[in-house]
Length: 334
Image (cartoon, rainbow, N blue to C red; front, side, top):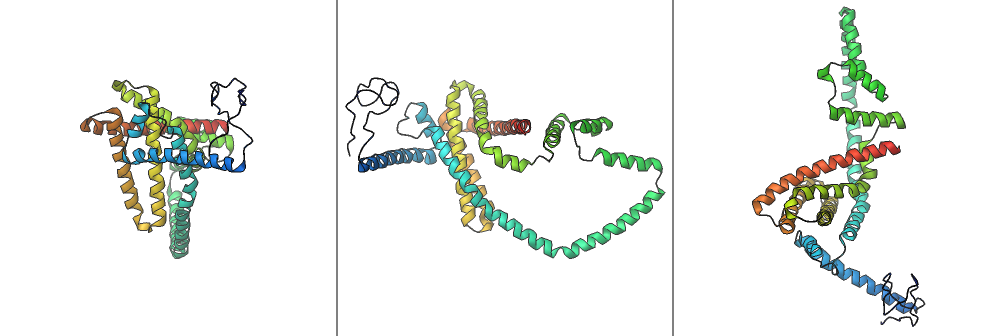
């Protein structure tokens, strides 16, 4: 159905003069707002099939020609494909909405296994209690024969390894330890973050809960950071940072697509297929990354393999930095 254009030449969105079918200032189409019902439905269906056509044209190179979608976008062929960020948002939305459904089966199985284990292990636990009682009696007799100095050393050792209630107590315990037993700088940094969180909130920092809550948001920090490392690693290609970011978005989009398909197959297939499916899709992801590097950055096979190892290290580094920054933000906002 043809569109009904307004006779007036003022834009209803920004008020500027419209010369033609579209406003040159804001881009809004100068069509009649009050249109018949079937015209409204027709336009909606038309927009859907237009988007559906772009989706099909995007999906084909995205799945079968690694890196080609990025290359087309960089070469200016944008109109026939879905924008990178739109593709990423669509795939991740589907993945994160479906993940709880796929993972619920694993949780139910683990809970069932735990119940069986708990019922079957009562006798084992009773035997352990009996052995512990005997060990306690033996330890008491040993302590009676120990000197006061040995008892004091034991007390200090237990006290030093106890959970720290605040930053000051952690620093005091570290200062009391010999240099060889003190935490290194990285361990100290992590413990200070966790102790600070516990001191501030009153409960222990739950890393798994933190990832579940903030991981989708942290990806918007991880991708630009990883793209920055790619720009440094492929600086001889003299590509703009935006080009590396577009490649990163497409790569992450494919990764989440593989996660979705992998978890779906593990959900519908028998449980003993799980490891095989994960291995297959991990190999697919590695192959996709290899082929996309060759297409986008135009490197030889051997150099691409070497770059693949370098990129893996850079990705882990980006992941660690993102996690640290995320934890620091979570603690500061707690």
